[in-house]
Image: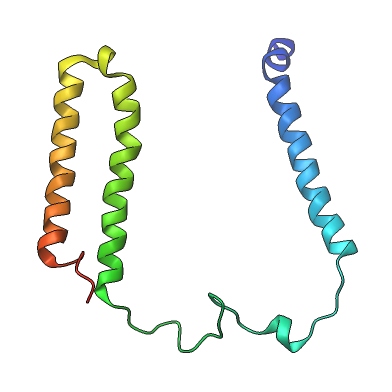
Length: 122
């Protein structure tokens, strides 16, 4: 029984051992060979090409969150539309109808954001 298990899963176990060994080896090698000369410029806070200008807990405009929701809506739509379109011949009318309901719900979310003015940048 153990021989069958090893015969079936040996490539996976070998891959995991080699990848773990390489990962640990690269981290240790980087730690040993990297130069250790810290200066104030290297240790300073850096964000988006300029110095941090305020507290990280400052308020953001709500439009950033609305754009993030809009991105999630379209990202989900694309992530589900491609496999659905590939298997449309196999899933039949029920699969088609359920995807139309899903697209309708996403369209309602998009219209809601549009009406709230999330797409209007002033």
